[in-house]
Length: 309
Ligand SMILES: [Zn+2]
Image 1 (tube, rainbow, N blue to C red):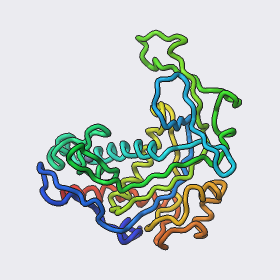
Image 2: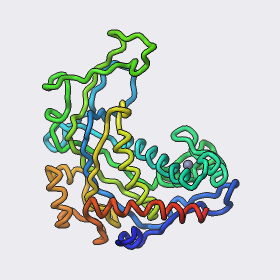
Image 3: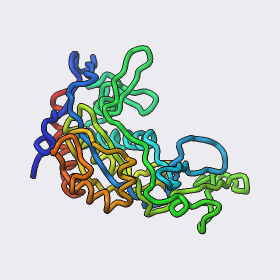
Image 4: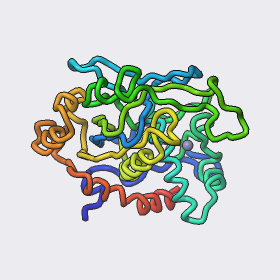
C-alpha cells in the first residue's frame, strides 16, 4: 500500500514547534510550504440533525435554509463543521497519548508548557492548534491551516427538513432531559425542526501547508465526529456517515456549488472519477476505502511527531 506521503507527495511528514523545546514551548511557522491538500466527501445524515448557526434559549429551533440554484436547501455552516472536528481531532490525539501510557495533561505540560483547552484556553503550539489555529490574547497566535466551506443539502428543504408544515411535524424535546430530579411540564418542552436522516451534504475541506500527520488526523477525526454528532443536541442527534470521494494534492478547481449542481452523490462521484471536476494536480486518491486506509497511517505518524518534540 502507498504511504500517505507518497500518495500525496510532496508533503512533509510532521511539523514540530521550532526553537525552545520542552517546558519552554517553541513557535510554529505560520506557513511552511506552498502545498495544499483537498478532501472531498459526501456527508449523509443518519439521525435527526439540527444544523443551527446560533445558540439560544428559545423553545423553538429552526434549521437554517437558503434559496440556492433554484432550490431551498438546508444549510450546514463551516464554523460548525470546524468546531466539532477540532474537538474530535483533539480527543483522538489525546487517546494516542494515553495509549503511550502518558497522562495527557502532564504530556501537554512537558511538551507545550501548558494544557490545551478548547475553546477557552488554547496552548497555541500543539498538533491541534497548529492545524485549526489559535489566538492567545496579547501574546500571539497561529493561523488555521484547515479551510472549511459552508454547504447545503442536495435535497430540497421541503423534502429533507421536518417542520411544522411537513408530514412529520416538528420534533419535540425536553429541556429537563435526563435529570429526573427536576419537574417536567409544559415549560420544559421545546420544539425543533431537523434535517431528516438520509439527507446528504457535499463537503470540501482544504488543508494548507499540510503534513501527512494533518491529513491522516483529519481523515480519522471526521469519522469520529460523525459518531459524536454535529449540530445541536449532538449527544443524540447530528450523526453522520461520511463517504470520502477524493483526496488530492492541490486546490480544487470547483466549489460546493459545482458539487450541488452535479445534482446528486452518484454524479459527484462520476464527475470526479472522469476528471470533469478536477484539481490543480493529477495527484489524486479516489475512493472511500483507499482514503480511509490512508488514515490508518495516523498512529505511526504520531509516534514520529512525538519523538521529534
Ligand atoms: Zn493546543
